[in-house]
Length: 120
Image (cartoon, rainbow, N blue to C red; front, side, top):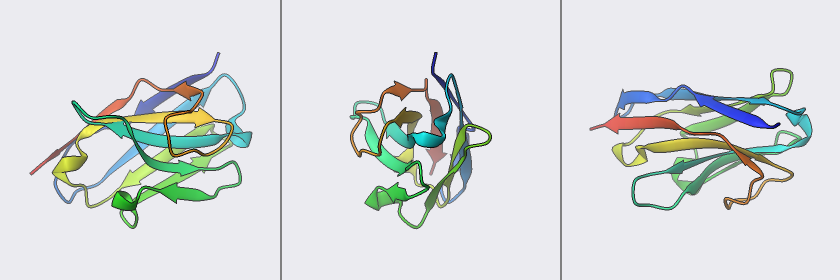
């Protein structure tokens, strides 16, 4: 059974940094795409970043230059380094996996999410 578990969320001041982790289990993830999404209250879940099986990275325009996604296939893990955080980026952040990178929510498996709160 595929399982994704996010960690690393918390409370941070505007301009601060957080590093999210996603631990994957249930299959070998090296051949699959991994993505990060976020969802603020009352809003739709939105794409943040993704990384393909060969390591190509993709970012939402709003986070380019501030966020970095990386994967460790040996550890079956994906990370999201978030710098210069803004209050409007307060949301639940989700990890997802699928056969290929897409910028919609059409991924096969999702984690339960981790809360990120950015105070002003």
